Length: 278
Ligand SMILES: [Zn+2]
Image 1 (spheres, rainbow, N blue to C red):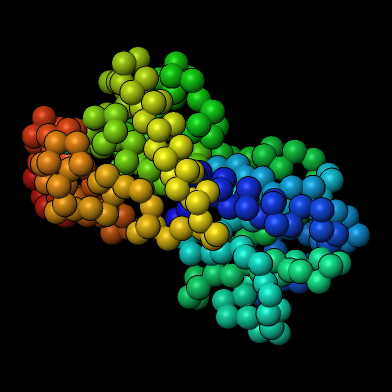
Image 2: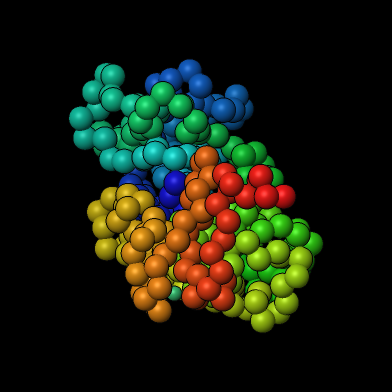
């Protein structure tokens, strides 16, 4: 799933290409994509797109005080739509502008989890973003420490928990733990200001690195293209110490880490076997 760097770079790209365009039509292509009733999308017709911005993993198309909030979920994309075909592959919704350019929201497969919310007022204060914790990049080290200590759980899970701190996902959780030289299984209730400061630096460095990479591209990167030291690199050599990058597999994600950098050489138990060892 795209995380803060990819979403932020994509918002910049869409702003550059589409700001100033006047909305002529919004067409939900599937029944489920539009999550709100009021205001209606039509209320934004004739308005100019001021900018495309982002918050956590959400994109926002800002038309004055009306905002279209878009969540891409796992494989969704919001792209310029040059063909504007009647039944676009994976098509979810389309914005058509007065100059005949268009944006198309697509999602591959059959999951249909991407969504569009039309809201007025501060979009961050209402659904679907109302329940999000502060963006990970907005936290000072002491604020981060407060959240870590107040939500005792494994660090890797903490970093991905959107209602505590938002915008990070599986890849950055792996990368941040590695860069901060902390075990992904470290219990957050036991961490102190030194660890919180290391996590804070790691958040900024990995987000900046991802952002710099995605800004070089014409479209959002795929997960496998993104700059990663340990994420999806099990079996490779750690770029810091040359030890072998390890994996702990879960049903929906994989924790990757370097034993030498992060766990004093300890190999973390595989989830599937560790439950029998309790
Ligand atoms: Zn290492």
